[in-house]
Length: 104
Image 1: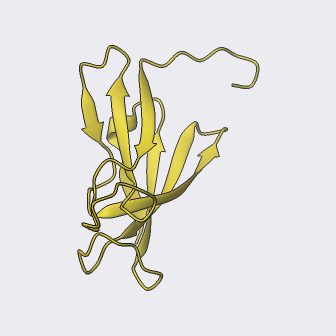
Image 2: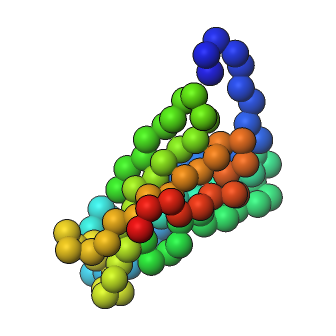
């Protein structure tokens, strides 16, 4: 980053890991989750609450933060609809477990 090496002891992963809409197939129609994994794979943690679906992320290089845009499944049907609320989460990449929601 800015011509300096950065080492991290974790990785972040966005996945479709559950058939949230109950159509018997895990695909892009399900909720997309966002996980933290320690490099040795001994620690795994869901960073965005499970009733959200991650849409996209933007990296803020000067601050070394990741901004994650996620939609809340308001009606709990396991499907994201355009009328549902979007929130933004800030992930400080120095310590991603200190994630916080910054926009309602």
